[in-house]
Length: 519
Image 1: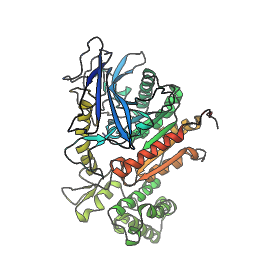
Image 2: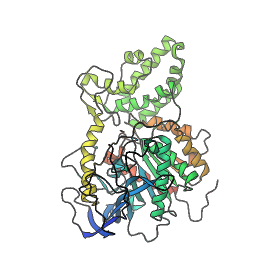
Image 3: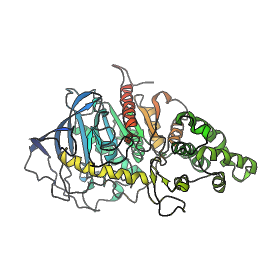
Image 4: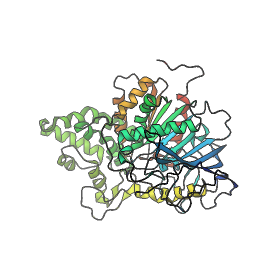
């Protein structure tokens, strides 16, 4: 997922607001808001400005019904600095922090630190559609409806954990202090992990959360980020975690080129073809999760070795393998033979429903698109992302200003420029393995949508197998699959189920009273 602004170096002590506010009728009928303001040294608010303070704070009070119970909470929207090696601020990161307000002692209260991906994407996606106190106004399958807006989230994990959503530099309202700050400080696998670990340490210290059990959750590139952070926090901030949640994980720097990469796509192809009812009758009649194990077994035991043989594979065997691939993928045997059993995902999105006049979405292949021409090797656009931006962009801008009372004319970057991004040194999968090896408390939950073609579910399984080649961490690793795509939580049934999985994961990862961290 995918301006330079000169920011003031003035450090604002923060502004807090003390006044009653009615719920906004058009945005959130069920969200009750009280806003508190305390003014120190009469700082100017960010409203009507195109800059944002390196430090700023607005606090509001709310309640949300979760699983039938009213949960009061305090929301803090603001910015905290990123420091350089000399202790000078070089950027301000925007965050939104939700704390359940009927908790007297937070020492045992879990804290979830949430990132999205891109790497140039704001934390908006999980913030207002998954774990937070509000969700989008969308239909039950995740498609946009009007009027745009949001409503309370009856499945939020706020009942069991406090949550902070963090926007890395150039996403959301987060920016470098000025154009002279080197991009290399932020834009790269290792730089991103390093500065965010420092920022998390500042946040935890400022908010007195060192005693709390801590969890990281990341989506898409955010899974690369939090996998690296797990070890960085332990080794260089001396902060130990209880859990990491990977939502639609990337490859995490785990090598899988050649035959492995080519073969691992097939189970995703099969899931998508099943959804669009393009498989043979005997497969189509089975439930999705009853059909996929057959495809997975073929992928590992037959397809991967066949592709590895390349030109040494006999014509007869190649045709037999292509026939099975056609049976499982919804593509023709000829097309598969033309690609020497190595069908690119771009071509699959274009080809699967070409004869029906549609493409299928990359991040969620339930979505269909319409191209200018039926010919071609890939879709004109990502049908699912266009659909999602319908719903998310109005909602986050309305929600931050109207409910969280954080007012600024700075553009909220759904996607911000973070290029060039230095991809070298990505060993984040092994970083996560090492963190788990060092920390007996640390648990892992992986969540995947069956129809995600960018970070597909079978690649996520493969990553888990490679993370723990020795098989010594299995009792602390869990994988869950959902009948949707990259943002599985946009589908109402999966929103409930996936949040429940996180809720149970958090409870499981909390040690019993007096239980020591040892093997």
